[in-house]
Length: 256
Image 1 (tube, rainbow, N blue to C red):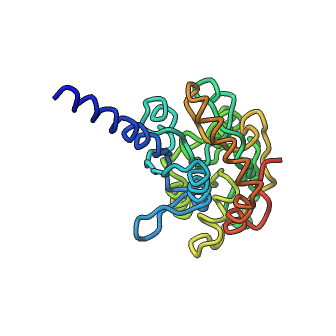
Image 2 (cartoon, one colour):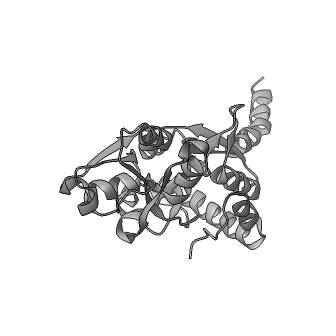
Image 3 (cartoon, one colour):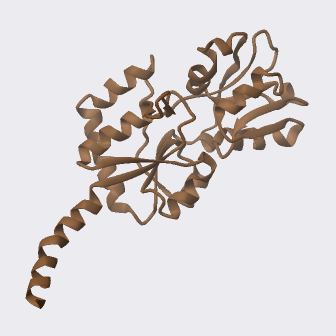
């Protein structure tokens, strides 16, 4: 009997090990089109979703998407709820004190959006006394609080961008501050976005926004980081990245 059990362990252990490694779990907050959102049937769609699936294909692993509130992503990653964060997560020095990042995935600009004809500009002087909506836990919240919030501007955090846009439409906010592409796809290109437009120029702040977005990883997972970076390089080389990007964007978002 003992010999049979030993033999069974030898047969099943490699299979158990392989089965555990075939899965790659990504944390995602699907409230941020065109990067990640839900179709009417509940399935996930978006640039980050397709990008993640292509990386998993290269790595010969199965993508599993774990939904999580954006402002709790880092703590959930550290708590091993998933293996990586793939949800438009900006690479910042502050976040790098807690987690590691893959190579840069893409870089998109930050914009203020307000009612058409508004004289508002993305400056503390222009926004003093106004209510500005931002996504909670985002670099846009960090920038708004640091650059405007201490100078008489009321910065209002929301759990998701769509809640921000809803309050903007209903007049509870004077403006919203977000990723330019997310604002375009989530508000300006939709019927509900009629009467709204970008206000002022692109807001730049390398020290707050960082070089772009990346996949958030635990600092201890150095082998996984290396595998993901190699897979990312391959999808750039074989044209997969460009093919996916062209489905969602009409300009180049690849890191410079």
